[in-house]
Image 1 (cartoon, rainbow, N blue to C red):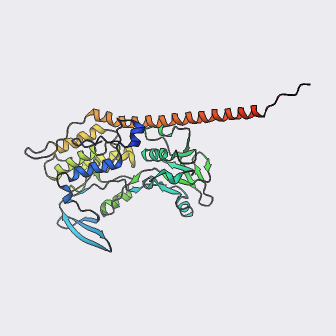
Image 2: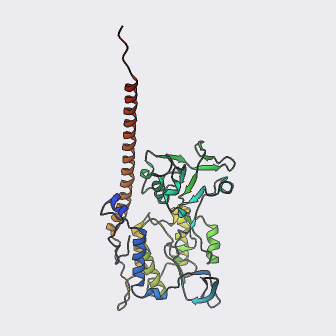
Image 3: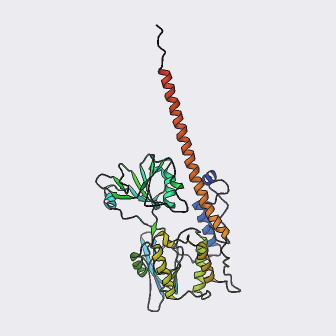
Length: 396
């Protein structure tokens, strides 16, 4: 979903147009990239951007300044330097370090059969899976997308291994297809034979590829104190209030470290709230004890992982809280006004999900018709062979 004042370009790829029609809510990644870039350079903000540079370390000194150790790679030489700032906003996202469950035998299996195990992050094209026996692991969007990308190319059936029920928004629609066989979770990899064992006692031999569409984990190695806490948590960003504000350090904030939908729109709300708070123009956050209580209750209820950092349980509540903290822009400034949460936007978001589900169902229907047509063709072919081989008995 786009920013409030900058809608997505009305430009569809040929593939999207053919599959979902002219009113499809999806945009090609290059269209989105160009849209983001155009917004960024519009007011000369690109002049403030340091490209091809990594933040190697971010720590506070005795003066409570953020000291960033930076590195720029150039041909044959790296440049290292330090810069100091009053505040730090981490907006590097969390779809970077793949999360793969620790299944018995998986490490030795990967050593014994290099290249067979991969994560959806590294998926680029279905062509390399043509004629291959493939297992897709996971029940959310990554697994859906990879599953249906390779379905026309891979050896049939393609297997989908799920630990439990799939993500509720899509339900079983992505997995209800005549060429998809749903399996229980993988419980063991046998590095000796290459066999995969499942929770229901079944197994598969001669698997060519196992693709994990199991999401990502948080990793911020340039923030050593935060990284130490992450390693002790269950796939979540600890010590952060409302997925945005550091509980122990008011000069540290995070944008985009959440999930559940409303991509871009929710980042906009976070950015405005954080900017106003750091500028001293926002409403104050609750006390540290209240922020910790929010985190502790969420951990007790949702544990960690995707459920913890998803805002899907209460979109309106999350947006409205950020809007409350941000308040209105100071008169005479160019600050952005955050409008009240529009329930129509929720309908747009759920409509996107419904469009995908309809596409999954249509693909399944077409596959069923193709199977039926093939079966009828084979039946007719056998009948013709029988008739062709039949000859009447000679009259006595």
